[in-house]
Image 1: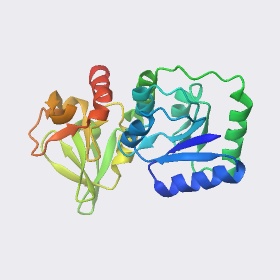
Image 2: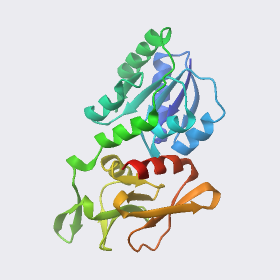
Image 3: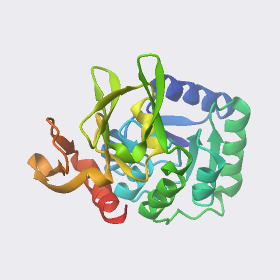
Length: 254
């Protein structure tokens, strides 16, 4: 049984590989991939494999973008910490899911289910672009309309509709408002992307941009996209070529 693991946390990927081997000694881990970009490049060679274990939230986007761009026909077991509502959005599309933190028992159950279904299993034909759209709707900001900022000894909720973008600067995460103010946050950019994925797009590792802040976009060097904002901002925000399709879909549907 040939398996590929998609997980941006390298230690977690290694732990998962060890756990798989402990319950399936015959399993061969072909690769451990840590980003959307790396996975798209790997699968472009159409490697022969039987099963994928995939995290959902990667550092440069949702893993569904990989499957949308490569049109893989391989069963997938998702490893996720998402809430039950998000799980229901893709539960019928994947083979199974393992909730983090996973255990030997949960991995074994997932592999047993895969083996049971294998003989009758047909390659999945789902529209992963539609899946991304459903997931982003489930992960929208309705349950968390504000981010928390600190000003001196005050803890202040900042409504998300006032935020034009989130970005990383010197390893710290900031919110930049439509009014031009900058606020230090305690959340990680990955967490903010997960919470606000319906209305914010992860352009690259550094920037998470509000749809309302996007004026338009233009083609950039090497098939990339340059985002033009509705507000003054000193840095260029560039969408990598592997995320252009996802960006265009988000721009059209959000």
